[in-house]
Amino acid sequence: MNYQSRDAEYTMGRSKVETERLIKQSQLYDDVTRRFFLRCGISKGMKVLDVGSGAGDVAFSLAELIGPEGQVIGVDVNPDILKTARTRADKAGLSNVEFVTGDARVLELPDDFDAVVGRLVLMYMADPTAALRHLATRLHPGGIVAFQEIEFTPYIAALHSDTPLANQLIQWAREVFERSGAHLEMGMGLYKTFVDAGLPEPTLHFEAPMGGHEDWEGYEYLANSFRSLVPLMEAYGIATADNVDVDTLAARIQTEVASAKRPIMLPPHITAYASLRI
Ligand SMILES: C[S@@+](CC[C@H](N)C(=O)[O-])C[C@H]1O[C@@H](n2cnc3c(N)ncnc32)[C@H](O)[C@@H]1O
Image 1 (cartoon, protein in one colour):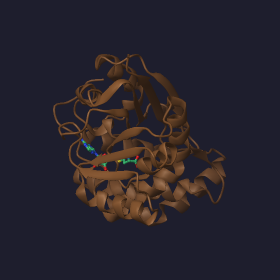
Image 2 (cartoon, rainbow, N blue to C red):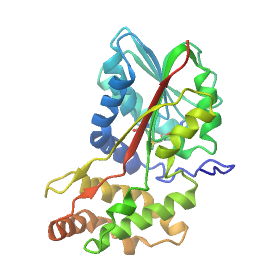
Image 3 (spheres, rainbow, N blue to C red):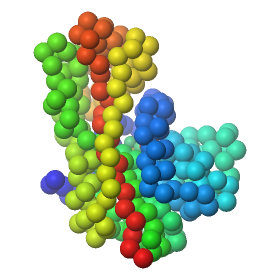
Image 4 (cartoon, helix red, strand yellow):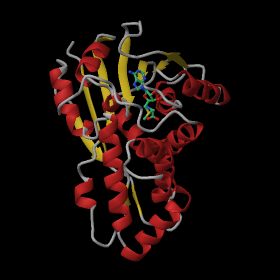
């Protein structure tokens, strides 16, 4: 992967709609994330740093796994989205989660974490290797590094002549993420990123939610993802709001799936974890 010198423009924007989309996204991926955390050894009593918390869903899964005797510190550069995360934590009565505003790469943080984790966050950083190298210094010996990131390359295999709309969405998404500077192949890049950051070779898994049922929530999720992407698509001259027609998009994808009998794959994620040498 060739990284550039600047961070990605946060491709999905910072709107209220985007915050709600992140919460819905979590419902589709939380199962993947929970199994990942169990596999990598997140357990009762741990102190965990969640990098790029967004609306808080990763931190909430962690809170359940570490129990009341553990502690999660969630960091995000976007103070507004952390307001939502804090409100949700209060509503759920979570006393073991705290959210801090700041750039996780430079924020002063304790150095006694048992684990540092993140989902869909390294992909927005100009230099994920430098970020990981620094974040690992916040762990005590034996601590866990665990990141879940997007991998777009499998979509080449999903293209099909019977699914022109799905093909178009894949092309638009790739173009807008690439133009924004986000790393769409961060998932496959995790191995190199861990090793170049001086960490042990990670254990890796690959997963993607898929669906074809008439009432699958993935159609609405995809439409909402494009709702967040349209402003940048227009700014970059990739497509207009009229071209995308977000309001009818979920129904049109579902119709195409039904007639082509080809299910839709949501963006694949790759998970990677390693424990620091003691
Ligand atoms: C795609 S969202 C993912 C949110 C959450 N991890 C989830 O999976 O639901 C990425 C989040 O990372 C945050 N972020 C990006 N770069 C960051 C940095 N350097 N330090 C802290 N947060 C960052 C963004 O503000 C955004 O809220």
